[in-house]
Image 1 (tube, helix red, strand yellow):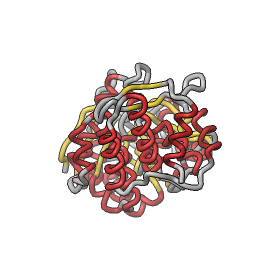
Image 2 (tube, rainbow, N blue to C red):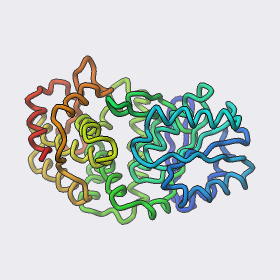
Image 3 (cartoon, rainbow, N blue to C red):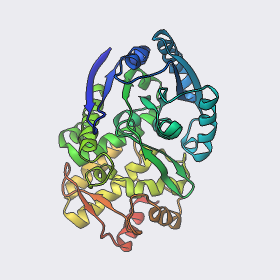
Length: 359
């Protein structure tokens, strides 16, 4: 059952994000009804932890719709978002003769979506991609917008491509099997979207009013879609606003060792730091800084990290793919709901932030 849907308009290839309950049970019909030519053979790239819960209904739905689905399991965790995972999947696809009218269905969280999306982008120079996110973080952020890729030891998302999906199927039922820590991690991106674009959304999640996730997911997808429409390839600066909390957050995630901190947890710490930097550099009020910290805390996300090397964090920041000539670009807030981009942040400012968030 579809509860709501959002159209993402990107160039000449718009696509729908359908949010519903048990929508994975009819994903085959949705795929068959797409206005693109598809052959019968498709591959479902699924997170190993998701396979037992959700892959059977996906495979059955595809089979009933006339497709011949094959399944590839991806080990759970950020470590799977790597160069080493690419070749086995690509070889498996070639062995099973997936052709240029085939499709990749990404079933899992952000790691699976990014990896499978990159596979779809590079196999036979690009085939259709369907995102079926099963985590809150992937539903509200990473499944929409076409960013795909893998990590290197040196940094996050350093290898990748823009490859828009043909469809995004959000099944709210999958959240029932999501561990509380993963659910909290997804709320970090919700808080981020509120901070950069929607004060009402921010106030709602800051008050812990998250029992009904369907309208929250819909609003987050709408925000992401608006940004992607204006700046699909991150060239004019608008899409960079989605990186609020990520400049330091990505570096902390990398320095901690992928998997030690979830992406959303690292972003939460990064948002706290960015809020304090916003107060210093562009006038965000102390009251709003406190509100951001309270929103992070009420959603069971960390404000600090421990046992992480400052030197490793600094090195990771230098390899940030969004940095230009070694200069990091920070997304700051004059007030909640508005953003500015700053590249004039000094090393002593960064050291103050590390004093704040490292315990």
